[in-house]
Length: 253
Ligand code: 13P
Image (cartoon, rainbow, N blue to C red):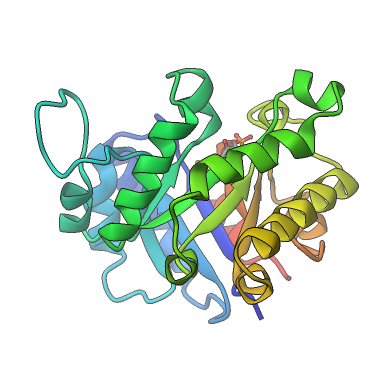
């Protein structure tokens, strides 16, 4: 009912030649990708054009960016605008990633502006939320998720919600090799869907795709995908290797 999404977030990895080498191996491995699944590759800005070009004509594999400024242009040194992304046929943008929040100090208000701007430019946001270990241990996980959802999606209309994907990425599971247990992941995803139902409506909640991220690998992806409210994965480290990401992308669901 909800088309699963397997997304690669390469973070600050791969030069253009390395991107080309990845694609040379990866593309043949996903030639017979099941139609009922979407793949997204989010390389650094410098490799967007290379990935975008390689994916021309592939309906269910598309390119995403890892960040975006909310303005179309202006004196914002070092930033990239939605127009620049659209120009490169970028269909998705990861917003509110934990590294943007915790390493670069992005706050809820800025992330909300980016989400609104992405939607206005027909770029679909993959909106990331997640609690720190400290917040989990203090029993605040669901409160944190609800407050991030409210801040990020407060200005989004019912119609636009169809283009939003939410990624639950517990901060303590990112790049640590520690994955949330199936029970922890399901609890969080279920709470996110319940929040969407309450603040939008049950139809939107049924349709919205909620991805899990945090140490997803070929060995644990099927267990996560079997959970009722997990609709896909946002993969960092294990998406850098073409064979490993192809295994994740084609896993049985
Ligand atoms: P890892 O898969 O390396 O834990 O990274 C997850 C992530 O942050 C994806 O956005």
